[in-house]
Image (tube, rainbow, N blue to C red):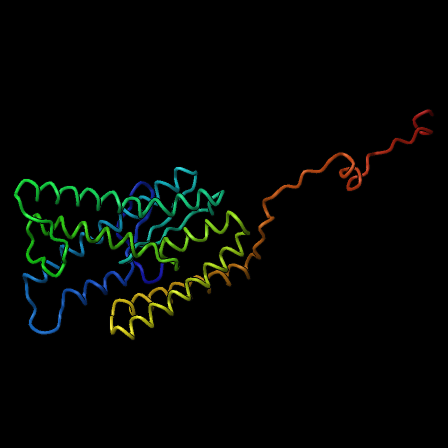
Length: 270
């Protein structure tokens, strides 16, 4: 798999880490100026928490997919989530929707647990819950749990963006598929994804915010790769929504298609 390195093999599923994740580690751990070992260690722990939360997010998708009889071949992790390679599409739009929701649900549970721990600790010690990441320095228990809460909240919010490869795109597409065809739902989702790319790019330029610009570039690359892969697949095997559908015929229609065998009575009498 291009731009991905093997990471682990869990329950028959091969897990890869995208090179973008590794680039994030390099740019984060080597800030401008003199390297600060304490800061580097702090950032390394944060990135490890991000990697674990993303992995659990994707395993949530995996469990949901397996629950509906789908086999997960590969998982590719990247900073904002991951990508699953299934053996076939979900059977119904509702299955597709529940599989897409499973990942963010895992992050909601993890973030909720971390928040409950922080509230309980604040209640015991009489302190206040501090969720400002700018005020978090050091690797105390409270700071690590706070980062765990913030990372999962970030993954939930970013994955609600309706642009591929975020879960929001699959949630939006599956909901549209309940009322229209899969092809139309996919086309509308793709258009909305490009609109999100343009909006994030404009916001990044106006606010001079590198996060929006980087996200827009990553999403744009993902959309372009999906478009190229889809065209290649259409050349090999033209898509057809009616490929696996069966049309019931009544006896009259069946006789019109396949006439019943006739017996030559004159020959039979001889």
